[in-house]
Length: 318
Length: 257
Image (cartoon, rainbow over all chains, first blue to last red; front, top):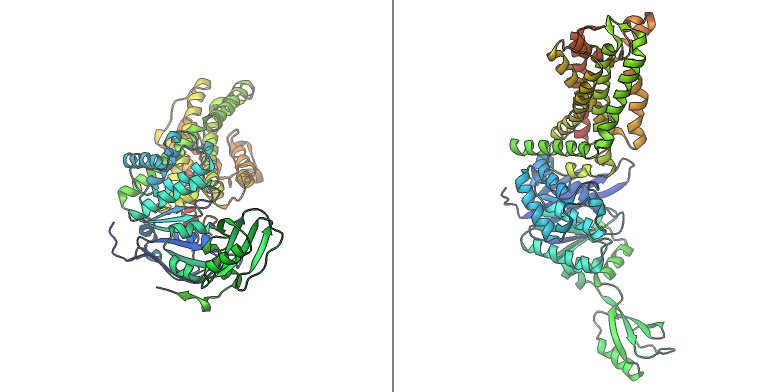
């Protein structure tokens, strides 16, 4: 299959109202370029999973249009589906089947003959560190292994667009990082990736572009770099040597004590940290370590969602 | 999807369905065989010898076709209803729904899977019945034709039940409260010639009566009703159920939100 379309995904005016009258999507527009690593962020119930559901046909849209590599899903959803691989939030494979059978069966649904499917299944099981478990019932796999099995299953037909709905939820840090490396690698090899996640550190580390969705509307759609530029304040946690009972305030640097050996300070983006350190040095306070209170993107995200921005306030940076 | 890809998708569904019921053979293949063996022993040998003849046949020869049909019906139905609902319950039906496999392939794949189990169990029960009763096959085309169509029809019915079901209770209501009474009152154990008036008319509304009689005709050459009518009725019901099931899948009823 050859595609000449520049965008991997193009959504226009997508709306979804469920049977219970809940309006999950209120006419969103979204464009994801080929080769992009794109984050779709939003609080619970914002419309992320509904958007993904429409992309993979599990949710029927109420109105709007959606094109996958230029193919309108209303014209030929079957052809569009060949390009998409989905990793859902919940484990949705047959827990009684073996990983190898799950992968070969999934490939069969895409019309891939068993010999080719078996070869690919071996490849992805090895790549994702599941080979030793390929022949055991999948219910015996650990949570992290089940997540990786779902990634392998989504890749078995070698899609050009991989959609991951919170792929690292409940996965330990070491495994999360190895999954990040894997996803970065397949993205480098040309697979467009759309990711929803609650770990904003994950979006900041992996993604080039981001859309923030809240209450069924896109409230921000820009590059991760541009988004972080909008951050006008960062909150730091300072661990100090020894213990103190109080701290003198300093203009422009609101200092608060978390406990006797930890301080918290919010620093405006245009202010230097040197002045703060000088002040603390003059107070006889020695700083032994310093870290962001929250991930930078997380601060922005919370700020945006709290402000409950509406579409009228959307800033769209191209 | 081109035709070759569609064939691969169909083959995959059928293979997966057969693998499923073979994997759990103590639940799917053994119980119907034990149940039928008990029917043969009790109704055929113990009670049957006291009943004597039914429609000019030894009683065991009369009930055997009905018992074979009963196992085909229940196994075709229960295979599709439990497999499809199980997939819905575990959400792994989504594996199929997100794929480009057309709905009619999904439908035919599940139906063939259900028929494989129904006919497989039917064959085992037939072999078992040979041990208890003497048969000479009266009409192979009628026997094969009606058993295939009946298995198809109940596989379709099972799929429709599974689409509408929202709990495991929902998939046992129809077999318990509809299917079992219809089978028992559908001429498996007695000839409708024994009934009169209202009860005979009521029994003639039971579709299973037509299937059991057509199958009995194919095996032993006797029937209470018209064979052509049986085929026409099963064909009509199967066609209606096929298009209903396909429409439900196309609509995504209870499958897509």
